[in-house]
Image (tube, rainbow, N blue to C red):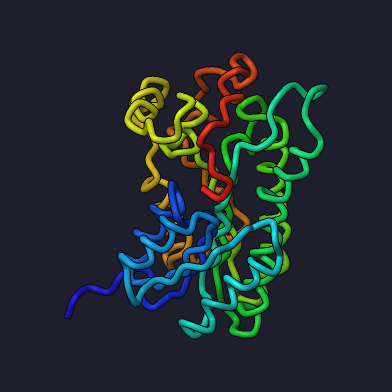
Length: 279
């Protein structure tokens, strides 16, 4: 008999799962024995990823600003695999950018819908199934911009702080139901979204990784699998005594001292070409 994975027979829903951190987490979860619903708006890569893993994965088109579509992704997991054990609210964008006096309000509201409302929807609808079964894990992606100011645009920073806040609040409610609720705050990670910000092109992952490594206190770039490994840990029974926690995965940048602040180079974050909304 082979060794069982750390997530053996668990069922997960991952939003923003077709690329970047989400796709990396799909791979790691399935490697560890889970079955995964891939929820994203990027149909082509999402369907391809689901096809790659056959019976262990399903894809569903999910605009995370729609409560009904997030609910449908959760319900698909229950329909196809019988339950939901893990909800990973991961979808994100850079969103509204600019000085606070110049930030566009419509873009602000759209960013809040993607980065914060989607987390609320995921927590709400995952808990519908997790509370009756008396178990479950909810994980949400925050950011180092949710730890410190000046590491991202204003709306992004506000939303990522809020993700940590709602994580603590919902953890306090659901603990008695056997449900753990945690967050992950990644530092700079070599994804298409980060590449678009740093280089102006979403596909310059090698150049992005090189740039991140140069600024990293450890001298290495954060990769999607680094965040995925954190998600595996929090989702597994190894973390059974952890709830209401934010796991920071940033090469020590927020505790040992960063290499700069976002607002010193605002033009970089203005390059939005190639940034995907559910990446």
